[in-house]
Image (tube, rainbow, N blue to C red; front, side, top):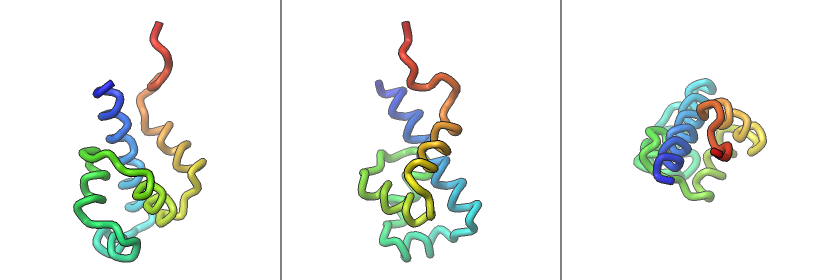
Length: 87
């Protein structure tokens, strides 16, 4: 299960990082305006930290994404077949 968690953490971080960059949102300003610590956001974007649902909700909302859109982007970031039952 640890491998699953690591892959998911990395994918979540990549989606957040890419969307923040795509929207030209500066790291420090984004953290300040959305009351997210720089350390927390950095660790999430690097895939080194599990994110609590409250932080994830705040970040997704601050990026202007719906959870449906975030889920779609996350699915695109995950490896093919990720999460499917292995027989």
